[in-house]
Structure formats: C-alpha cells, structure tokens
Length: 180
Image (cartoon, rainbow, N blue to C red; front, side):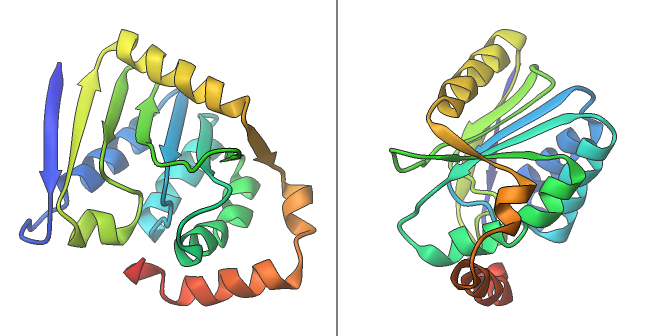
C-alpha cells in the first residue's frame, strides 16, 4: 500500500507531521530516521524520547556538516535530551546528507522532500510517499546501515566534552529554531 501525503501553508493540518507523530507513538520495535535538517519541535521530541524510553530502538542519521549552520546547531541543541532517553545519533561524514526518510518497525516507511522542522511541516510545499511494505522498509533499513558505516556515532560522554563555541552556536540557533 502506497499513499502520497502533501502539505503546505494552505493546509489546516500538517498531514505528514500528524502521520509521523502517530507512527512514532505507535512504534513497537524500531524507528530509523535520516534527515538533512532536523530541528524537532516539543511533540516530535516527546514522541522520539518516549519511544526510546519504552524500549523502541530509535536511531537518527543526521548530517555532520551542512550548507547552513543554524539548522545544524539547532538540531544539535537537542542531542543531550535525545541521548539521555536512549536515542542513538549518527552524523554522516564524507558526503552532504540530503535524504529525508523514516521507517517504523520495518513496515511503515516514508521518503520525500519533508525535513523534520517546523518550517518544512508548516511553511513549505512538501510531498512524501508513505509505503506499508516490509520489503521496502527492509531496503530503507539496509541503506541506513550502509550510512552507519560512513558515520560517527555521537555518545553522551563525547557530547558532554564539546567546547564553548559549539554550545554557543546551539544556544543561539535554539532561539530561532521555529524559523529554520
């Protein structure tokens, strides 16, 4: 089963946002997300951290560098809370990450243009395909594992050691994250 979900500023309800929150809330085994821009709002943070706390294997593949510093820093400002909940975070190296995918329990998948940011959910014209198929989900998970081979896992200990410069950028970006 395949469904196309679109959204934009003229929509009353951000359909893909609601679909993602529902899928993450109902996840039983795993959530894998690859996102070029990851600036989670409070509900998305709650869905991901709650899933990890209830034993769901939540893994994020995020960029290690970007074409714009602010969304990267705003997303990183959430790492401490995500890591504390048990979310595993990987930053892709060697290539500019531009994919936007998610897979839940190996069965529910989405791929498209939507970033995990308020700007993408509310202000941009976006389109994603949602696929209910374990074969497709398995392929997305295989691609995620391939990216893990070219990524650095962010650990709580290493994250706590980052310097004052990155922390200041994160603090500044967090102040305007709604607009990113």
